[in-house]
Image (cartoon, rainbow, N blue to C red; front, top):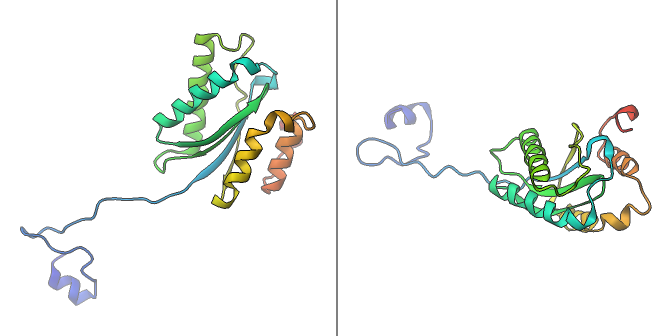
Length: 175
């Protein structure tokens, strides 16, 4: 649109004209802070993520997320499930990230024989958006998973998380 046409229509000159008749465009930017609390479990919730190798698994998952331009704030879990608090890059869809993470970690676990009785991940997962104000509290929650699960089962925890977020669910799919 020519400058005179913009003025006639009342459209402001947002981008200044540059020599040659083009417009100077600012760099494309997106400013986001997308915190996701992601939870997924082993297939049939079998307790196969043995403590001695969990750290290696968490390191691998961290590397995977880093390659996807995500910022991991905390990863943790116990024998039958994993919790992740991460920022997800704005160009990545949550479902694609979780699918790719599960696929990659599944292949890595099998190739490294890290968890000998591991039979895959449950198809489903839970994910919750969180505010910046929730971040530190959630980091502590994930850090303390072993202590937390001395008192609460994964199903009880998942039910409580879903209820706290107002997410409807069918009980039969939790069992």
